[in-house]
Image 1 (cartoon, one colour):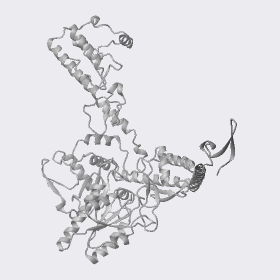
Image 2: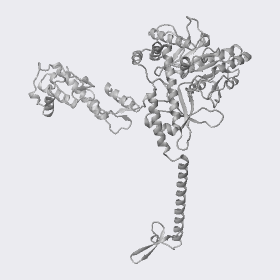
Image 3: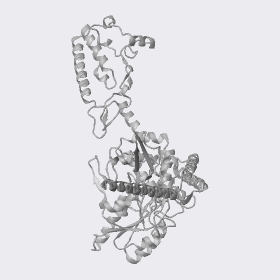
Image 4: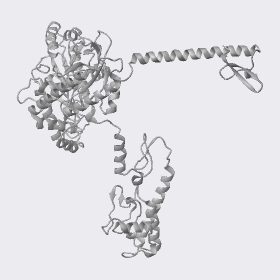
Length: 625
C-alpha cells in the first residue's frame, strides 16, 4: 500500500490523510486514490513523494488544475476509482494505520507547550513540525533528518568565521581532496591496528618522517619511536611521563627517594605543561622570562635544576609572542652540569607551534635532536603541520628514551599490539590528512608555505606600524619565530588592548588581548596578537588594517579615560552635595513642624514657605533653609 503511516511524519498533513482514508473505507475505493492536499503536498520528510502513477501524489498535473482542486475539491463520490476495491486485508491495514496516527496526534497535543523556555524551537514549522526540542535532555521522539540538520546548522550560525579567527594557530583550510579523504576516514578507529592496518601504516610513516625531519639519530632502515596524539597537549603529557619514569628508574637504581620530582618551566609555558605537573604530581620551578625576548634565559633554567629535576620544558614558538627559546644554550650548559653532577637532566621541546616552522624555514637553527640532551619533541599537526584540528605528534630521540614499561600490549582487537597513549579509540582522519600534506607538498612545498607566512607577517607588521598607534612587541619579520605579530597600544588614555579587541569583533575579526607572562621586572603588560596562517593572505591583511584604522578613528574621538574619570567624580560630588542640601532642608522642615511653627499646608513640595491671601497662595522665593 502506497499510503503508509511511515510516509506521513512531522510536517505531513496527517488530518487530510485521516479524513480521506476514512472516506476510502466507507466507499470501498482503492487505497491508491487517497491524496493529501496541503500547502506543501509534494514534500514528505524533505523528499518528493512519488505515487505509483509517477506524477507526484496523484494531484492534477498543471498548477492551474492543482489550484482549482485546492479551492473546490470534488466530493469523494465523484472521484474516479482505479483498480479493484479494497480487500479486507488492505482495509484492516488502513484501519490500523489510522488508529496509530490518532494516538500520535493525541500524544503530540498533550506534549505541546509553546511557552516552554527550556526548549529549542524548530523554525521551519510549516515543513518540519511545531514541537520544541528539549535543550538538556534527549527528546522523546525522533526528528526528521532535514529538520535535525537545519536546527543544528542554524545554531552554529552564531559561531565566528574560522578564517577571521586570528587568535588561533590551528589550520582552518585544506584542499578539497584532503577534505574528501578525511570524510572517508572518519569511521576508522586508529586503535584497531588489526582491522585497519593501512591506516596504522600511515601513522608509522608520519612518525618516521617527522623524526627524520627533526634530525633524530636513526639508521637508514631504523624505525623511529613516536606516536600520534589528539594534539600537543596529549603529546606533552606522554613526554612528561616518559621523563618522570626515566628519573624514577635512575633514582631507584641508585637507592634514592622518588618522592619529590620537579621540572623547570618558564612563566611563558603553555597551560598543558601546568596540567601535566598538577595531574601527575610534579612540582614546577617557574622561571620568569626575560622582558627583552619573553623567553627563559638558559643560565636561569639550568641553574634551577637539582637532583630531583625530571627535565627542562623549553619552547620553540611561545604562545604569547612566537619566540624560539635558546635550546642550544640550555643544552650546552646542561652538558657541563650533567657531567659534573651525574643528574642527566634532559630537555623536552614543546614545538607545538614552532617546530615545523623551524624545520622548514630555519633549518640552520639547532632546536631539535641534533642537541644530545633533547630527548623528546612534541609538535601539532593541526597547526603548522597544516591539518585540521585533532592530530599531534610525540617523538623520542631514541627507542631507549621511551621506557618500555610505559607501553601496553593488548590483543582484544584481534592481534597483539603495543600502545602508548592517554586515550585509546580515535579516528584516523588526522593521520590521513597529515600524510596527505607530507606527500602533497614535500619539503619544497612546506618551505614555500612557511616562507610565505613569514613574508605576510612582515607585510602585516609594517602596515600596523604605519598606523602609529601600536608598539610592536614581537614579529617573525625580525627574528626566527612562529609567524605572528604581537603588539600593544602606545597611549592607553582613551582605550586599552581589551577595548580594541572587543570593538574589533564588531568587524568580524577575532584578535585576542591577553596578559604577557611575568618577567619579574615590573607589572605584567597586555598585548594583542595576530597569528599569520597559510590562509591569511595579504588581501586579508589589508582588510584587517583598514578596519583597524576605522576603529582607531572612532576610539580616538572619545574623551580620554582621565577626562571621563574626572567627569564622573564631578558628577558624584554634585549628586552628593544635592543629597546633603535636601537632607538639610528636610531636617529644618521637620524641626519647624515639631515646634508648631509650621504646618504641612504652609509649605510647597520644594520646602518653600507659602502665605495664603484670600483664595490665592503666594510662594516666597527664599526657601526656609
